[in-house]
Image (spheres, rainbow, N blue to C red):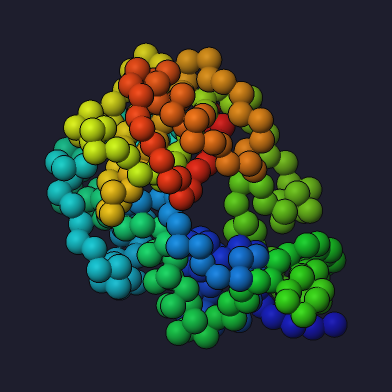
Length: 275
């Protein structure tokens, strides 16, 4: 029995959308299954760095973002891999011109909108509100069980790609292990409105202490992204799928940098373990 489509991509985030475009450029017929019926407009990431900048530039997509790059000297020169701090100053200073491109400020929601528009222009089948709920495979094809607004259906594909995040159902259903060690860090994130009196107390760059790391990024209209990383006996957070409260975020700031911020009107909160 022949396949219905060439490739099913589970997950319509940046990775899944960019892959769909690349597959169309290669002549394949991808179907992207994205659980959310519409974009949330929220952004976990706020900047593009390193090879991602080059990859989007090669495809002419940086111009669509409408964001110019910032000078390397103005960048915080801090990066991380799974919460492990990386000092990148030496890379920026010693690299040949263009080898380590300057960061590009671009919110994830903006990047996803550009990538989705590009994938649709190229003819990719982007199915919002459709979720992968199961799979089976043989030597010839993968059969994907999906659930959409009209109910459950099946697709046979030559390949299935899991771009469905850290808790990937594709990985679990395929029996692919995800070995590692117990987390030693806890990262708190929140987009909140701050009191006027607190603005002068915020660090201009990432502040590191013996207890962890803290930064606050202005997003406009009085909203700031608060990021706190604790790596010295971080407290337990009950469930990574349940957003933290604003009191938990406030307490994390107090533990790491010793200041109390009058946060209010949280519009997005997240906590995750790493390290």
